[in-house]
Length: 162
Image 1 (cartoon, rainbow, N blue to C red):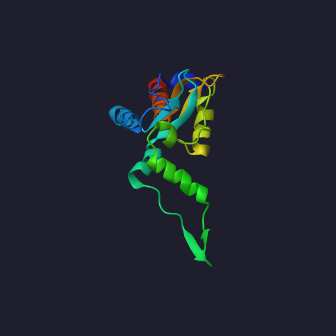
Image 2: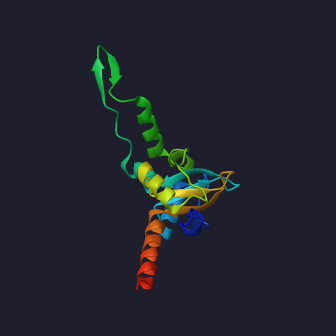
Image 3: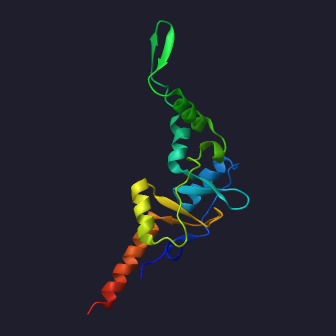
């Protein structure tokens, strides 16, 4: 029988609130040697995810947008609103200002490991927050959790082989 996400996920993941400082988030990531933090409100409802990639804007800054001048007019070669988002991340001081898109890809407790792994692969994410029907964070499933489960399954099948 296929295992569910609830059987393999990390329960009670380390989280952070949206109004927390970036310094606090950076300390948590470094101290616990993790690459991302679920962002939850006071009721435990998932609001977003803060990843190491989100913090790279703090180190690199936002690149100036490409533009050309034509007859005293500035014509941006890319969408200037994207530059505003990047600048906002580079200058942000709280988790909410820097965290990833608020439309977080999640899974449920009853999803199979296979379904979760397919979702992670297709969406190119390294971690899936696990939420209940109300959006409350119950755990997190990482690629490492899936690989450890695969190793456990292989060890069991090797031990039971004739």
